[in-house]
Length: 109
Image 1: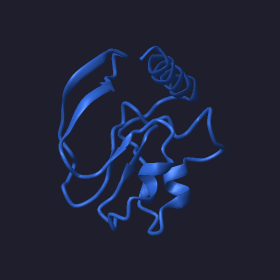
Image 2: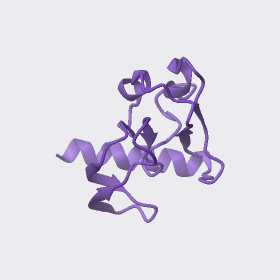
Image 3: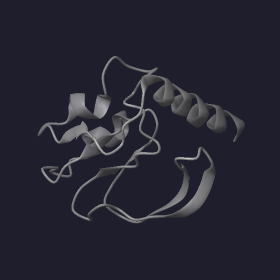
Image 4: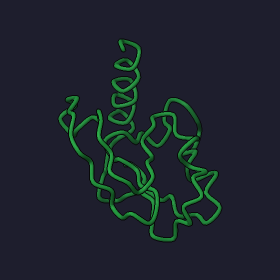
């Protein structure tokens, strides 16, 4: 399961720097690489959920599995708005595969 940031976000940015997968973005348009559900690199425009707060790209979120014991965004959020996104269910095995894919790609660049 990936995490999501709720509307309680105060836009402090504490979570963005803690994400080992660079899955957290400020509420602005994002153009660049991300991994879709089929595991392919795509270069497209990712619309933010809202322009008022940070958001997490679910295709890049691994719940910090393989890096930390708990999701770092949730551990540093001062208003507890980083929560599990029940619409994006994934097994631990799938999360680890995603983590390995994301970080093996970055080594090639």
